[in-house]
Length: 309
Image 1 (cartoon, rainbow, N blue to C red):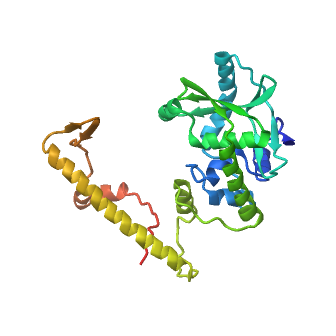
Image 2 (tube, rainbow, N blue to C red):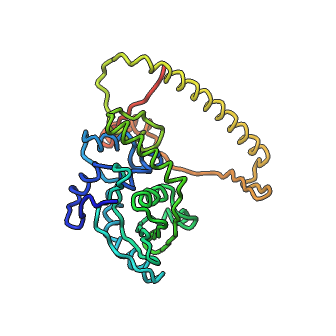
Image 3 (tube, rainbow, N blue to C red):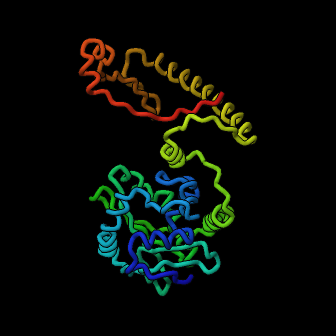
């Protein structure tokens, strides 16, 4: 590995600009299609300079940066392992498109290990109790690929009052897949300029719904290959409809067992058919009897609905 730039004096915007020159650890989950905040399409636009780079979940990132020293200090107090900060953007010499900006490094018996600090909401406590979330596993394996490190310590402050730390060993098989995936993305999409095919991730769905939230009313000719996409859309829609019918049949059979009972137990499974009460506004009556009030409190929103004929 070699040093691209020392990061201690860089502004956040400068740091983000440097990250567009290669693939960083947090980019891996985006390329893999498992990042909930950013789509591979958005990442491609950033890496090719078509849009300004944006941070994922900026509020989380902001407070994560603020709390990083606390997580690092707590890790040292609990383990006795000293962490040293690196303050450098590193680059793989073998794969120059691979960058690493480490939260810290550890000298363990003369060998360098990586330290990574995380913060998470209380909703993620159960996930951290079970182990390290998949996006972070990809991230630290990427770092180990860049640096040659054999081990990473990752620590997380969850919900502000729960602390977890785990060891992750270098996984050569996973690293091989990560390198291949990143190499294809960089050479095909960034260097080659080929626009990625949209995937089905939530991040990609949110990106297109937000980016093209309004239509211009025009009709255009689509490329011929759109016909096969339409056929695939029809096939999957029919399959979903069939599965929904089968799911409803299974649900109705369970209801026939429960009848008036609210809870049914079978083996280790629990089936609950609970009565739910909710309040709703009778907008039809309000509009008829108090049209002025209805108009005063009426709000409008819009979205685009996709249909394939």
